[in-house]
Structure formats: structure tokens, C-alpha cells
Image (cartoon, rainbow, N blue to C red; front, side, top):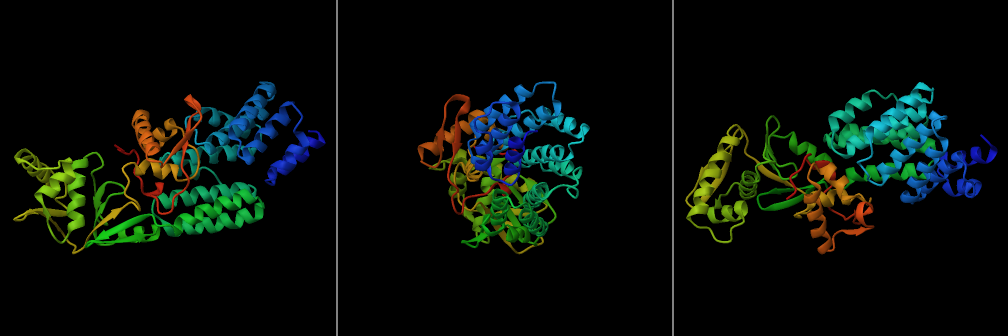
Length: 406
């Protein structure tokens, strides 16, 4: 490694891409191409970064498997930053094994953390936890220890375990200070803000209250019967009844939960469940059938009793019924929740993260664009969508996977 390449690598390791580019901006050899790609990624030009890293991988060729594997890892990191979730995980795993076999433990671990972060982003928490358990951050430099703790915190927050999340973020902050990389410190600060931002709304007795993630955790371990409109379930501390694939039943359950301890008129339930502006006998007959199904689904949690004008919810073993809703009610809140991270997303990446079809996601994006809530740039496969982070918007932490978003 010549002096300029070494100096550029040190600058990139410390988070200073401009100094690195001053050393190698005019060079076209493989190591310089790779470092220029990483520099452009740190500056935010992910398209140019991806092209440079690919050129470097081709230039290294099969005679230098370690350098080529490092380029594959760099490309995977760029793909993750640009929310290109369709990049081949097998290629990253092969690169990780090559690096590990040649003694490059640090970059092999970095590849492992990229794979875990991708699993976390698409909601595969069990797989992410298993992969993370195989990674020991103790012998690695502060930057990798920061990445480890950020993943630990991300999993804990999605599991609604705020105390372990706070502890992991504190460790990540200490490691980021030791790393002395401003971008890493900023990433830890952004992750910490999630615990200070409302994650949901509590609807009870006609009043609404914003809840932090810690308060959501406390609610779900309380004795209350919770109609969870974030994850489409009805639950108490011991039992969870999923209704994500039974939207009519959930619509009725939510209406009854919002009205508790009162009842809900039949015509109102028809409008909420079926979208009918005027109820006729066929609607009322269908409502009776669906209420019967809801009774069977909730039999261990609550009864649904008929009243003179409609129906009411009667919880078992508790005297409190609440509705947990997203911070903002929006038809396509699931899509907006992912766009709210400020990154650009392709429709295919959103479909993968949401567990929905790409056509369904595209319809939602078109609707959001027409309403001025999302915007796209690029064409064809390079088309990306984004929206600026909005205060009070639903985060991805309380979203189920897969989701029914239409």
C-alpha cells in the first residue's frame, strides 16, 4: 500500500472523506477506486459510490479475493444506506466467509452487522437476534462496537423493551465518542431520539393522549384490555388475538373499544366495518354475522353484548378498555412510517419491508404523491421515494410484519 492510499484510508476511517479525496481523486487504480467509492458514500452520493465500488471489485479481479470481498461489503453497506434491500445476501455472506478465512476479522464482523441490520429493517427480528448472538463485539474497534449496540437497541425497541434499549444506546454513545467519527455520533443521537418521540396515541373514554415507547410498554403489561390499532390485535398482558387478516372484525373491535364503556349504534358499526353510507337490512344482517365471529375470536378476553341501539364491549377480568393508535391516522401510514426515516426508498424495498406486493405499495405511493406527502426522483428501476421526517408520524417500531396496507 503506497503512502497516498494509506493516508486516504486513515482519513476515511476517521470520517473525513474530503481529505481522502484530496489524496486519490485523480487515481484510477483499484485501491483508489474503492476508497473513492467509500468517500462518495460518506458524502451522500450513493449512486456514484456504488459505481466506483463495483469498478474497484472488477479491477481487483479474482487474483485478490480479500480486496474483492471488501468491495462487496462496501457495496452492501451502500445498498443498505440507499434502502436497496434486494441486494444479494448470499454474496455478502460469501464475502464475510472469505474475509474471515483470510484473517480479516474486523471487516468480516462488519459484514455480519450489515446482514443483521438488513434483517432488522425488514422486520425479521428472530433471525436478527440469532445472527447477532454469533457476533462478539469485545475485540473490535469502537466503530464496530457502536454498530453492535445500535443493533441491540434497535431489536430491543422493536420488542418494546425500553430499559435494555436505553442501556445499549448508552454503550453506543460511549463507543461512538471513542471512535471520534461525527457521523457515527449523529446516528446514535438519532436512534436515541426515538425513545423521546411519541410512538402512539392512547384513546380512552373519548380522550386522546400521546404515548412514548416506554409508556406503550407499560400499557401492554398492565391489566387493561388493549385494542391495538398499530399491530391489529386485541390483547391483555397474557393473551393476544391477532386480527390483521380480519379487517372487518378489527374495525368493529376498534369502534367498540373507542366507545367503551358505552355502546355503538348499529348504523355506526356498519359504516366503520363496511364503509356503507346508509345501512340497510342486508348490512345489518351481515353485521350480526361479523359480531358473532368477533365474539368467538375474543371469547377469552371480552364479551360483545347487544344493546337497544347497537353493541357494547364487556371485558373479562379487567375494568379498563383502551385503544392504542398510531400518532397520526393516515390511510397509508405504514408506508409513511418507513419514508419518515428521511432515506430514499424504492417501491420494491418498501414492498419487501412491508410484506406486501409491489403493486400495492406503488398505489399507496401514487396516492401519497398526489396528496403532496411523498415525492419521487429518478426513473425506472432507479426511481426512489422519500419524504422529510414529520413530527408525530408513526414510527416503524409498532408496525407488524407482514402488513396489510390497503
